[in-house]
Amino acid sequence: MLVAMSLIPLGDTAGKLLSNHFNVAVWFIAWSRFLFGLLFVLLATFLKSDESITDSQALAKDYRVWLRGFFIVAGISSILTSLRTEPIADVFAAFFIGPVVSYFGAVIFLQERINLTRCLLLILGFLGVLLVVKPGFGGSTGIYFAVLAGIFYGCFLVMNRMLANRYRSSSLLISQLMIGSIFLLPFGLQSLPEVEQSTYFAVCALVLLSALGSAGGNLLLLFVTKLMPATKLAPLVYFQLIAATAFGMLVFQDQPDWTSWLGIVVIFISGVTSVLLPQNSSLRSSKP
Image 1 (cartoon, rainbow, N blue to C red):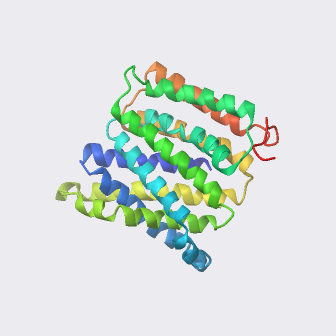
Image 2: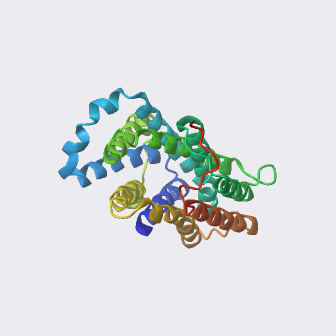
Image 3: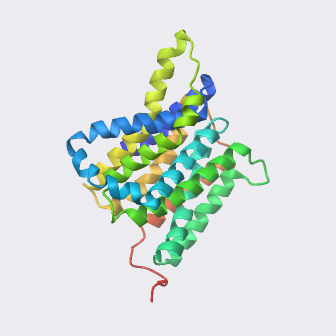
């Protein structure tokens, strides 16, 4: 699980290197991530591909699957845009507004139970996001794109819950990668990078690392969830914050300021505490 949660920020580190050091367009990075991620997942699940294909017709006809695909495309495009100008640690911290959106979205649209303690912890986490974003007090356009990415990802998580019992998780992963490849195809082709011969190998390696880091992390997460209960895995999702901070400091020498450090710590503590709460301690149910 820790490897999976490290691979995702590793992929984003590669994406930031591509855009900052090799001037590769965000649209191409996003499109290549979906395309090569799709090929990797199809290859990795080749022996069980017949199981996922049986869902293909139903997936193609379900508008919720396409809406879910749009949310993840918009989220990844937004986070890659943010990474062009912002430290990775700050981007991931702002991105963690996603669980707040997901929680209240599930309450509104899926009639899930409300837990008072979890609500308070989510509000605490939101305050941590504000410490990183600094709205009106030095927050930049790039960090707002990270918040937008988190909002899209929160909507994506709500759609995940909505579809989880209807389709196989592997089918949903393949569908989102395929939809992303289709949506971003014209933008990716229009922004093909002009690579010098001296940097050709480095650019190709980073493109593959960006795609395989993200896809590999999500695929590994699917396998791990079959071996361990969700209650033990959920807190480890916040390890992404630690991994992102470490990659930012090692690769880009990014040092978060004290308010960002405080926000990261607050988000981590509130997130881990929230997912460790007993599932049956609810304030009220929106269902009769």
